[in-house]
Image (tube, rainbow, N blue to C red; front, side):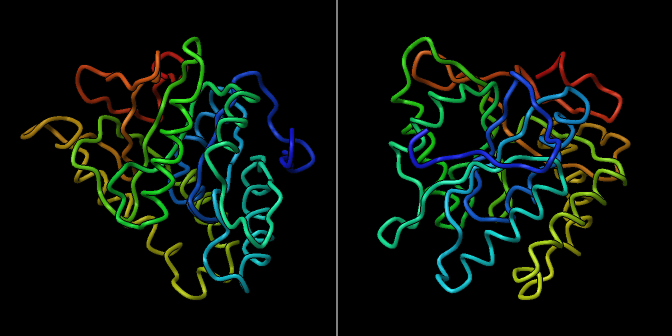
Length: 249
């Protein structure tokens, strides 16, 4: 479609069950990508990363795009590319509406509204405003992510095993210029371990027993229907490596 194309490695997962990751910057797809990676591997869903920007440093944008291609190819994900012009440094609402109408995803990932970083917050509202432009018969699952600012009320904790985590760390390390500046790929395991501590009570309920997870990522899951978001789970949900993702999501 106009100004946009999808690329991937030689044999990406192709499916009519498509997931869109609206990533504020290249690297966010890896940091919050535990659940998308499991959905691809365990449920056969097609992952399409949508880089909303390539960062504010103009001199680094071409390099960040190359790094993003490498990282997504490593994970087996596709990238929705768009024509960047000097006056367009990020996707606009009309772009996101066109993407949603064309791909009609089953699941949309985006940052939550208080994820501290200004571009993360702007990405949240960009996607929400685009969703409001969709026809009434459009529906999808919306999954909010966190990194810079922790959510007060996540409702889903997803376990990751050592192999899955290692793949995310490896993919994140391919954002070479960024991890040279800040080696956050090395702290990703510790962040996921702390998510187990937080999620045990934030998702499971105050005073609840913490599950026997070593690594996890927290999310908030809602349903977009008839122009608004609806709560999906009556109470928090904890997905282990043994749970059937197709049945729950």
